[in-house]
Amino acid sequence: MNETLELLLAIGLPTLAAVGVGAAFVARRRGGPTPPTPGRPGDGGRAATAVLDPAAPALAAPTAAAAVEVAPEAEAPAAAPALEVPEPVVGRLARLRGRLAGSGSPLGARLLAVLSRDHLTEDDWDELEETLLLADVGAGPSAELIADLRTAVRVAGVREPAAVRALLREKLIALVDPALDRSLATAPVIGADGLRRPAVLLVVGVNGTGKTTTVGKLARVLVAQGSTVVLGAADTFRAAAAEQLATWGARVGVPTVRSDRDGADPAAVAFDAVRTGRDTGADVVLVDTAGRLQNKAGLMDELGKIIRVITREAPLSEVLLVLDATTGQNGLNQARVFAEVAGVTGIVLTKLDGTAKGGIVIAVQRELGVPVKLIGLGEGPDDLAPFDAAAFVDGLLGD
Image 1 (cartoon, one colour):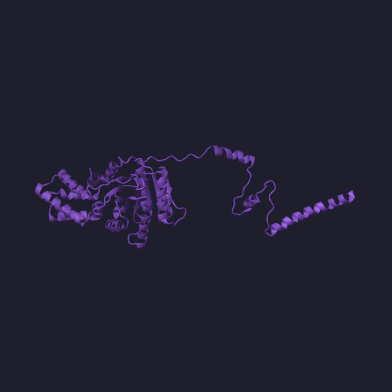
Image 2: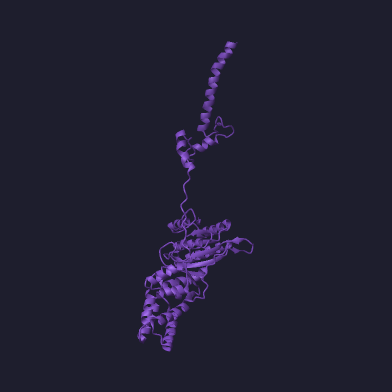
């Protein structure tokens, strides 16, 4: 009896084991449940499935040699790049004024040359008016200036070069209007709910005026003044715009809110930037927008949407229109449309260095009733400065 039982056990156990293995194999081929992995009770084989998933990264245990090689890198974190220190804003205007004067501005030089002649004929006065018109001063302001100069020369008999320069300086400063408020509204605001919100500055303009570069330079101005800043890359149509803006910000330690894909909704990016500024306690949020032609209704409507979405989170402190000083009358056309759509509060004039078009300052202010608040006079990162009427005219006339 015992011999018979031992014989049955010897034959049966291997057979049962084989059947069990076969059943498991069949179940796996048919998509049935996988038996639990030995040593991991209760996990149902999920760890093994994750490793076999083609979308999951392959996992491998590091070798001892690999551990030795990796350890030193883990102990020595990469050094953060040194942040740039923007140039103080106070010293910029004098330097930029000197650059404008040194470039021999044709506007100031031609005006002084004509006014210094012994006897001014009608042809001379016509030449003066033509010079002003070519400098984009505009017909109205040009006529006013000529009339004032005629009266002063006839009544006071001004002829000496120094007196002529002083007279012309006085009249030009009056046209540029030093009484306009050119300060930037960059102070955080307290809403009706008592919550602190950052000042929001929206930067708009057409293609090619240098908006993104201007936003980057303006961030440096604000950092130099001690403000904390967040950048919003709402130009989602130009592939390099967000990267360019992020590079400007990284140089001075300013974060940039951007979309992870091209063509994203710019209003959503702008909203996220404002919310990030609020949540992090930033002082100012600068929002860059895509360049848009003033005669493209769809693009201008989109700009209106950006403004509506932003103001759900925080009020707009400034809408800055970037204009290329060399565009002349076309720049005025742009300014009119943007002022209607976006409620422009200030002008940033770029490419003013050495230009004969300095009169655009007078024309655009007269047209919109909006002050020029910032000017760009060069390609350097700190070649953006607050506009000052007297310093600008002195630059035009030379020292």
